[in-house]
Image (cartoon, rainbow, N blue to C red; front, top):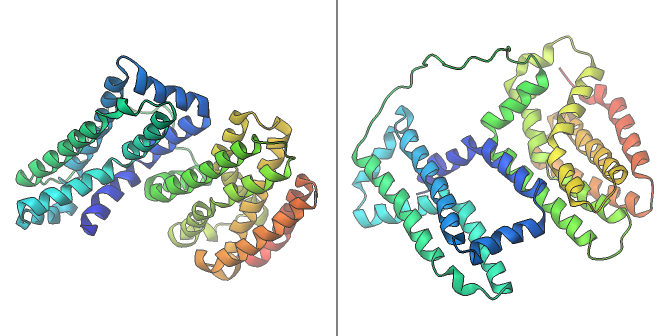
Length: 356
């Protein structure tokens, strides 16, 4: 069962990480809490709300089913057809667990619908949702069963593309690194951004509950930015283990540090857009928080080069560093001054820690 989940469900979220990343940015970056609630109430109380909800869920389910059908055609997945030796009841149960794995986003949204329905005393409108879940699970189970009963293996051939881009592939280390993140580390990218965006949203919602100064969002958003440490570590591994020849290129230390800061500036944009969209902070305050988060995360990345630190070895040091940063923020030291000191120290220490 674990093999089935890892080889199929995890692969789905890895390959579709870019899609979920964009959807997450749209849902948390451009829609406020009131707009999310309005959509939920439309699904619950609208004349055709449940019909629209089922149509959206059905499209997602068909996308998942199409992925399973195409994935299990690949030669590397020939082992999947051995599940035919399982008894029918066991196969149905495990395919149902597989379907639930695919339908996780739908299940999570169902929990949100339940909370809204309880608040607005419209729980009776959810009577059809269990039947929706059952039908969608049945679709994936039936599709998986049909696929293993009709094996079709092929070796994918590169066909001629009908669309040719009028410009060459970008010659940029930053572009190649981001492309590698989306292609090979999609699950890490998705999980890291989901956690950091949720922390940023919760921080700003709590900030609106009373009158606070900038120290509260500074501590909360610094933590949100630091939750990108897994993504930062994957970039370190990309440079150290995958793109090995890049470290031997005749590039100055200052330029390498500038590339590190630039790519992290792109990575932490979603959390910053959430802060801007929320409207609780002024643009100058968001700029201060963004600069501080960029400085902290970039320095953590530089720290990885010290004796080729692993992520596990670095966590304790990062936690102590975050405690120290929190104390500096609580003592009302200007955020831009803290960020400037971190950048200067990173510039000083980078040539000592970076080894070709």
